[in-house]
Image (cartoon, one colour):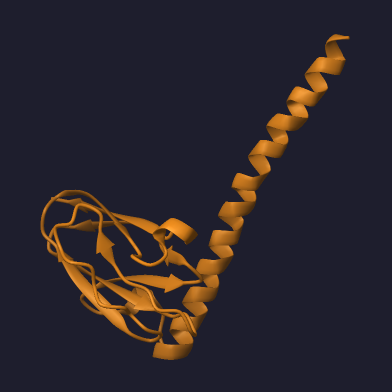
Length: 138
């Protein structure tokens, strides 16, 4: 009797864990595609962009979704989607929402104040959970 209760509990626990793992794998694959698209468009890896940290916008994701930078760093969001426009909106409202960023366009913000800064894509945060975070270190 005891095994008949334990087995379903274990199976439910495992089933609940797999969507998280699959979701992380899916995001990693999407971000790898985003980087390939960036290289295709700009001829070099995003890590080689001079003077900025790059966040890619692709398939309703920010890549990377979390970024840590030093105070004074400029972050450049680059839309590498083929058809969808996005925006950048700081959750605390300290800056106005960016204009729509169409494919191959960019927007930049410089972060001066240490702390965490949540941001989102104005048109896609609710329906697609397109949310990111910048942690600014002193």
